[in-house]
Image (cartoon, rainbow, N blue to C red):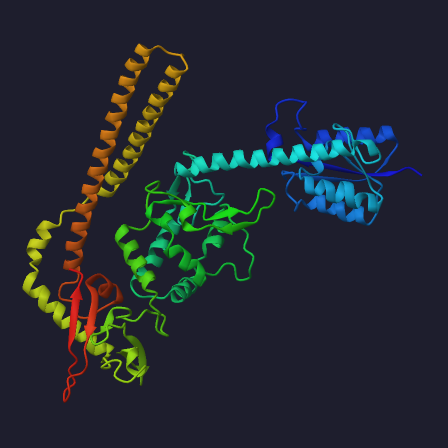
Length: 518
C-alpha cells in the first residue's frame, strides 16, 4: 500500500516580484508541478492539493493551511510535502508546535524539497530549527522595512489606506492624493450643518435614513468602489456612531490623519487603537469638504456634549445658560409641554444656591430684544455691504501658498543635510578643505534662501486667513441683524454665555446678563 501525500503550496505578495529562478517560486503552478513530480518519483499517492495564494508565511488564518491541519489531525494522509519549510510557515513557534510536536503524534511526516527538511531524518532536526529561526528573522526584518516605508509616506501626507474616507476618492493621477467626491461630500456638509443647527446625532441618522440616502459602505458598494465588508445586519443604514466619527474627523478640513490603529505584532493582523499623540497628522494635504468656521462650531458643540431634547434637537440654550448665584450650568426640564432652565444646585443643600429658574421661551424673547436693540444701534448694514468684498479664490490661494511653503521647507532640509554630509566627507578626507568651504558656502546660501521663502509664504497664508476670518465675522453679524426667532446655530455664533439671576419678588421678571461673542 503506497503512502498518501498532501501537497501544500503558498504564494505571497513579495514572491510575485522575485526575478530569479533560485528565489522562491514565482507562481503556484511551478510549485505544484515540482511537488507532483517529486511525489511520483517517490511512489507516493497524492491525496489532495492545498494552495494559498497571496498569503504571508506568518498568516495563521490561511484557509487552505487550516484545512490541511484539520485533515492531518484526522490522519487522512501520511506525508505533508512542500517546496520549502517557509512555504508551510515562517514562524519558529509553529515549526515547533506542528513539525516537531503534533505531526509526530498524528503520524504525519513533513518533507520540504529545497531545504531538505524531513522529519523521517532524525539528524536534521537542528537544521529545521535553524530554518525556522532564519525565517522568523526574515519576517521581522520584512515587517520593519514595510513599516518604515509606510511611516515615511504618512509623514509626507500621502494616503496609504485601502479605502478613501467617505466624501473623497483616490486621485487616479497622483498616487496617495485624495480628491473630493462631490455626491458624497454634499451629504457630509449636510451632516455638519444639521449638527451645527442643533440636531442630535441619532436624529441626523434618522433623517438620512428617511431620505433613503445610503450609508458610506453601501454608497461605495453601489458606486463600485472598494469598501470594507460590513459585519452587522442593516448595514445600509446610517447609525449614531457613524455620524459621531464623521463630526470629529479632521480629514474633512484637508488634514491627513492616519495611524489611528496599529498592529499588535507582525505575527498577527489584529489592530488596537493608538493614542492621538502617536497619530500621523499632516495639514493641508487635500481640498477640504468642510470650511473651518463650520468645523470649529461643530467641535465646540461636541466638546460641550450638550444632550438633545426628546425631539432630537439640542436645547436652544444648552450649556450656554449659567446660574448667576453659583455659576453652575443650568439644566433643562419639561412641564406641561413647556421647557424650563433651572439651577441643579438649588436642591442639593440648604442655602447652596438662590435657585435661578426661567422659561426657555421667555429667555429667548429677552435675548432677541437685546440683540435687536444692539444691532439697530451699532450696525450700519449699508456700510457693512461695502466692507465685505468677495474673497474669491482666497481659499485656493492659501492652499497653494501652504503647499509652496512645504516644498520650500523640504528643500531647506535637503540643503541642511547636504552641508552635514559635506562635513563628514571632509573629515573622511574625501574632499579638500577648500572644496568643503566653497560648496558649504553655496549650500548654506541656498538653504537660507529657501528658509526665507518658507517664512514669506507662511506669512502670506496667515494674512489671507485673518482676512477671511474678519470678512466672515462681519458677514455673520449682518446675517443675524433684526431676527425674529433664535436657532441653536445663531445662539452658538452670537452668544458666549448667559448669566441668569433669581426672579425679582412680586414680578415675573428674571434678570439676565448676556455675554456676546462680538
